[in-house]
Image (cartoon, rainbow, N blue to C red; front, side, top):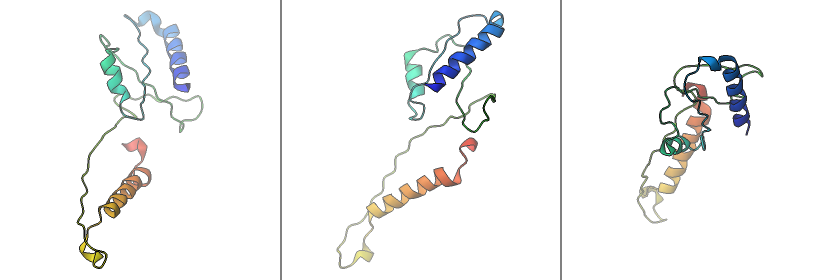
Length: 127
């Protein structure tokens, strides 16, 4: 809800001060499901961006001090991807576990490593 209030307020102030210089129609698009990586596809599929020539994106950043805004050209706070991995194992007998390859253990280690990479090794502002 805060995103909507900020966009509406920002748009109001920009149009109030600079509206006479803007030619055409102003379209406000509220990005659904931005954390899930599917919202942009929904916007494109809705055709809401037809005949749109300039886009300004906005995202709330809790790291900024109150009252400050940052502007950058190009993508920011973006990237969503999916991948598929197949982890397989080799069964065996409890009498000789050293001859087995346990896919459950391998999968759990991959999950932990991926979580560590994202949460402990990567600065979200550098992605």
